[in-house]
Length: 199
Image 1: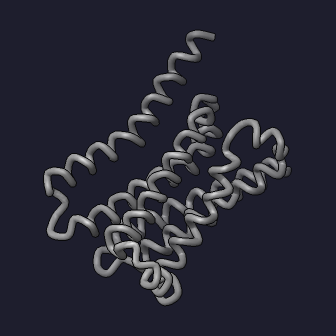
Image 2: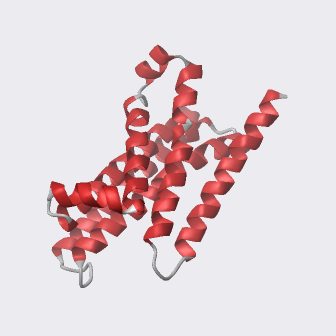
């Protein structure tokens, strides 16, 4: 048992580091005035990209578990998912505070008029019930079937995030294309795996 716990603990520490270190890095660069000509915009973009990367990693844990069978992956998945949610909340707060200066009239105006803002907001809102129900006691109270159905919303949220990034991009589409490809591959894997287990 102790042999199994060692790698799992190390993996969870790696997950903790992956969620925490970018915050320290961003805080350092902000303090050093090293985020470019428009640091507020850089902060908004970087928090969003880190959150999106962690969200995709959260979804990728299921196929990784299917392929490897290592339970440590699934043990750490909730931790990664909560980090993704935290970073995406930071992305939204950075946008509202650093770019919109908490001017709720303009925030509401952008939500109504800019499609990429609407996609981003809806994608984040869909993650709220997933974060609230990610704890073991809530999962047990809901039942496995209902919990799994609810948490499939993560695929919808990821697709909305990819759409948000695509519309927001103006020139270099390499990152949006990569994100779309990863989201499509993860959804395809989920559908194929579900069909295979129904047989």
